[in-house]
Image 1 (tube, protein in one colour):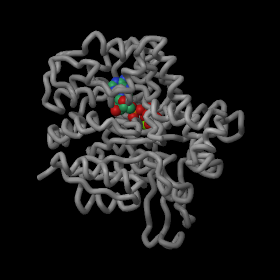
Image 2 (tube, rainbow, N blue to C red):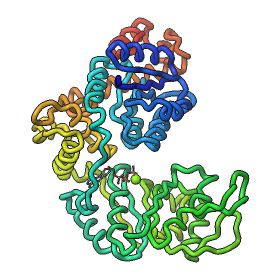
Image 3 (cartoon, rainbow, N blue to C red):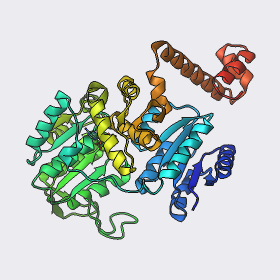
Image 4 (cartoon, rainbow, N blue to C red):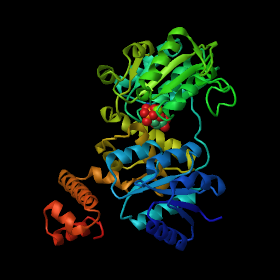
Length: 441
Ligand SMILES: Nc1ncnc2c1ncn2[C@@H]1O[C@H](COP(=O)(O)OP(=O)(O)OP(=O)(O)O)[C@@H](O)[C@H]1O
Ligand SMILES: [Mg+2]
């Protein structure tokens, strides 16, 4: 059956032209301008690839990406955007986007990527081989080595641990290692992402509810605390808890028992807490948005993971490790990284940390058809980062100009002579600049 691509973009022209392009290359393509339709389409006729626009009025493309990945982790998603801000690229990477294309799209590159994906389709669906936790955390950095020693010591105890670090630094990996090392490892390790659940549902998710506690509560429901009884509970993104929920959580941690929403009976829960956040909790405490007493109760031990850019000595090791992993997953036999690739990796700042590196290597492995990974296998944005200082300045200039023009166009509702007035340049100059930046005038 033909490789099945779903295109989601609020602009019907984009949907139609991409559909036509893909169909003319022998793929099956469907499209929708309504992100809300995507979950239905996923079950009805599961696509092999989804192409998602970032900026859509009803639902932001990254939110859609997140939802797609929650339903089906293995479907590759390519993001397309009029302006790829660093923040959006990082968010998209975080939720597992395969690549990020700026509009106007570089069609040959996109087609090449679709072709590679179609070729590896099926192979890709094999699951990642599970490894014991101590083998899954890799580092040669002294600070990380110290953290491994802490994990070894603290893991087997019941002490609660707060893990901090930027997105993608390995917080969840550390949490897994702590639970696996504990005497609770045969009991459940329950995870809850506090940022992903709407405030109104969070309390019942954590503590459960009794039948009839609120409209729609038809049955008694056990919360994560009860489900984790005897085991560990991973509270992810605690920096996103409201003060109200923080107060309730503190009470449960102090009393070691809870009351389900709408109930009056106290229920015992023997749970070890492992929490994580990428926010600066000290700042939040100072600002009064995080309770100090709750923080101290949870952070008997705290582990702060350094960002990847502060442990560049890990780049080679981690890249090599991911290369092995993806060689296996995609049945490839790539021997190593070319010296240029190493340079590019070292020059990059890794705002998405280890996750970003992992995604970057995965994509490169899929693309690579030679004995070693070369810069041609890397996504374009990495190569742009690695060019000479002069060229970097030129890039920065281009991206600032592009942003200023887009802002002016937005302010002037797309009326170009007004945009030119805002920018205080001649209309013709604006046209020329837009052409040069690939923003079709
Ligand atoms: N030291 C490491 N060795 C091997 N793999 C790692 C390492 N650190 C992180 N990873 C991998 O990188 C990815 C991101 O790690 P993880 O999910 O633990 O990050 P996180 O800090 O929880 O991120 P977020 O704040 O975005 O939730 C995972 O696939 C993980 O397996
Ligand atoms: Mg995490």
